[in-house]
Amino acid sequence: MTRAAQLAGWMPIRFYWQHAEPFVDWCDMGAARLTDPFFTQTVERALQQPFSLLFRPQTPARVLMEVAASVETLPPTGFIFHLSRCGSTVISRMLAALAQNVVISEAGPIDSVLRANFRRPVTDEQRTVWLKAMIAVLGQRRAAAERHYFVKFDGWHTLNLSLIRRAFPAVPWLFVYRAPVEVMASHLRRPAGWMRPGDLHPHLLGLDGHAALGLRPEQYYALVLARICQAALQHLPDARVRLVNHRQLPGVLDQTLFDFFGVAYTAAEVAAMRRTIAFHAKEPTARYVDDSAAKRDEVTAEVRQLTEQLVGPFYEQLELVRAAGEQVEARGK
Amino acid sequence: MSQESFEQFRQLVFADEALQRELRAAPGGDSFLALTVRLGAERGYSFTVEEVAEAMRASRRAWLERWLQ
Image (cartoon, rainbow over the protein chains, first blue to last red):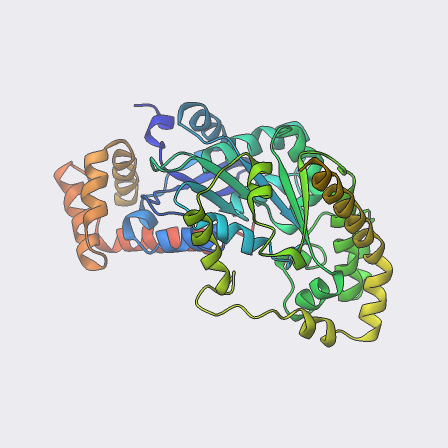
């Protein structure tokens, strides 16, 4: 049996470097469905099993390509990009409620592939090859019911949209966003890991060298959010893209959106998806409470002004493109 | 040497679905460690419970430190 055949059904959980060579860490996740808010949480649960913790093959990255070519995979049905802290996890959780949907949410190995060129001379072509293989293998068909495959990227991955679209030109995608001041409030409460100045490559942000380290946190956060909006806008308008404002959740997940992704669900399936929204998307044991007003109120006048100045114009553009798209859609009905 | 032996056994497990099933079905804790040692010994591999426990700790560390590289 070849190494690739041995790894059928195993999941890549880590893409890492060892002696300047890329490697993949594999985990036996059994039949566990990826229903946790984030991929990492499902991996953590799998690693509670002693077998899954102890018997983890580590292979050179080329084996990932061999596995991708030899196992049954689901072609991606849709991608979800977002501004962060804007309700994208509500969407991924709703989709994950159905056994027919495989939903990969902010998977670490995809993140590691996308940042592979931060500290090493890795070409876009090489990242593209790894990304296609990683997404293919994460979308292995592990249960008979699985038919559709959605990938929710992390917020900063939108800065790699050009590369991702070149790799998957036909896959429809959403860009989810929210009033920037509410997103800022969330990062000021608890910033995402990639919001730490110095984590993202400065060239992604149009900065030189260590300029990020000279900015105040709120200045840096606003700059990153502005760049993410800009990156999305560069690909708009496009028939393969739908914009979703946080305000439209959860109602926006309706037949129109399912048609956009080319999927169909029964009324009972839609009801099952809707049941997830009563709970907090990232802490599913807690009831959901809309905190938009609280977030708007808690930022200082200075942060509000900075956000409106740096991110506001891009947010307004997104709103205009969304409104225009909805008009076209309404005329088509 | 027995660490090497454990690594050889681990490679054997990756290629042997029957062994995987047996190990997956084992309860955790000491009985899992003991089963791993016994299945290895039955196939000519010599390593101790403590070495398997250390391999598990290393495996956990590699996962927890994944963002450090």
